[in-house]
Length: 281
Image (tube, rainbow, N blue to C red):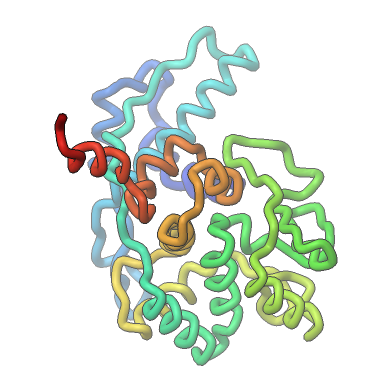
């Protein structure tokens, strides 16, 4: 989990857990936290909160995962003799939303024409062509740097992680840059860009708002930045990529690739279908 994502999780956890003891971490309190956790959906003209809504089970799982990581760290450092186990909600079903080619083109064009939103169009293009996670995309530059990955345009290689970043569960292995994206990247760099996705010459903090505006203006629904990764892998399978190559390029386990995206392959279960259709002797 990226550093700022952990900070967001801590901001959400503190109001509920700050006054509780480690011994209070159990199934009952975790379920109470899931009910307690709300997000703001409306403010009045003075900025006061007037309407809330429950957050998703996936969000609660990520936040409780941060709590578990903190407890485990305290155990390793000797502050706790044992770390209690948090009880997250059931893992939600994987979202099947992916963009058609026409939808993707409409989203890119809408962002490109949007007010001060050309950087969102760049973010979308990189996401669609590489399936890279949002947090990694917004920290990628055109030269080696200490905060994120970079595009080696001379050799056509994408490095999703800087040399100073430690390897984590969110692996970011190098991968070849698709030809179409490479042409865009070379043009952006020639125009003076230092970062692949930048606004007024600097890094952006989060494309969430600009992306949501582009989605709305394009007349789409159910589309988030993660949809770009889902779309990228789906398209790859529709074009015949192998599970092994997809796992390496998209930095996703073969098990996840096969479970979520395998049915998009043109020959999905072809051998089973052929066996069932074969005439019995």
